[in-house]
Image (cartoon, rainbow, N blue to C red; front, side, top):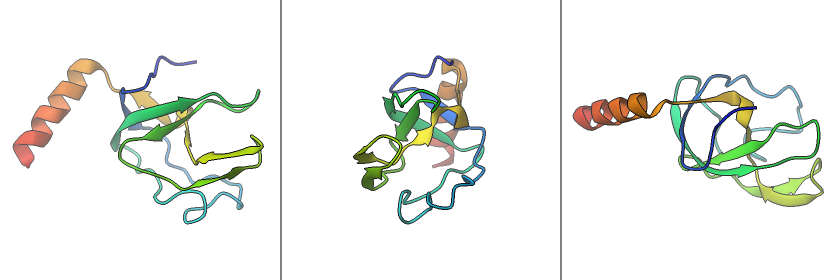
Length: 102
């Protein structure tokens, strides 16, 4: 599907809130994504068939809750399809620019 792996820098390409009302900020997510923001992949989870893999991020820690689609509790994660990998050269450039701004 994509070549994102743990430790990769990614950019959010889809921050559209989920249509399912039972998934909401506060219960499942401490914070929501910002389209265009960059994140670091902390962990990748395989999901049941029909559900894309999901990721946790270094920059956001969500609550551990029972996941009905999985049948067990784990940290709420974001669909991997919401992200694109930032090419290494661009990631280094971004980090350089970020360091110059701080």
